[in-house]
Every structure is written in C-alpha cells, then in structure tokens.
Image (tube, rainbow, N blue to C red; front, side):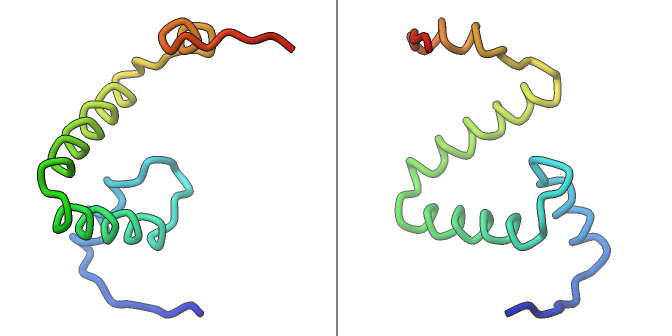
Length: 82
C-alpha cells in the first residue's frame, strides 16, 4: 500500500541529505531512521558507536576514499580464486 504524506520543504531537504545513493527512496530512508531510533532505545551504547562509525564511513565516501576489490581483500584477508 502506498500513501502520500505532507512534509515541510526543510524536512525533504534533510531527508535528501541522508540518501546513500541517488535513487534511494524516501521510504527506504524513513525505514532506516525508524530502525536507528528503535535500536537506540534498545541498546543506546551500541547504537552510539554504530552511528559514529556510519558517520565516519559516509565522510570517507564523500571524500572519495574507497577501497577497490584487491585492497578490500587484502584488508579483510579474503583470498579466493575462481
């Protein structure tokens, strides 16, 4: 079921800033926010650490600091061949 909701332009702008990829829907963003809120209520310490880690990762992404597949394999010790 789909529905339309009214939100202020400022709220829409804030939601847009939370997008992790261009075509991420508002539904996906809102679901993530609900998950975060519920997790924060259940496990506040773990949640705080996770939020900080996510923010650091998002900043690295914005700065273009990404690992290619070879670098990721080395970092995580994943070695396999097909």
